[in-house]
Length: 130
Image (tube, helix red, strand yellow):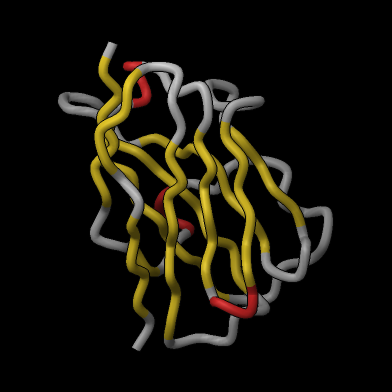
C-alpha cells in the first residue's frame, strides 16, 4: 500500500523558514515524480514544486522560485521542501503527491497537474504571520 505522510508544517514569522517532509512507502523509490501542492483558504489547490526520481529533474512555480528548494533522500524514501523567506501569502495546507512510474530524464519541464498524480498525503498546515 502506497502511503505519503507529510510533516514539518507550523507557524512561522514572515522571513522565516520551514522544511516540509514527505515520507513515502509502499513503492520502489526510484521511478516516481513527487510533487508539492498547496491550498489556501478559499483558493484552488496549486502546484508548488516537483521532483523526479533518479535525478530526472525539478520544477518550481514562479511564486516560490528562488525561495523554495525540493530535494530527495533515497535512503530515507523522503522528499523535502525547504521553504525560506516565507511570506504571509505562503500560508496554506501543503500536500505531497506521487506519480509512480518510469520518468525519462529531461522530460520534467513543467509542474504536472493534479490529475497526473496517483497518491496523496493528508496535508500539513503552514501559517506565516506578518
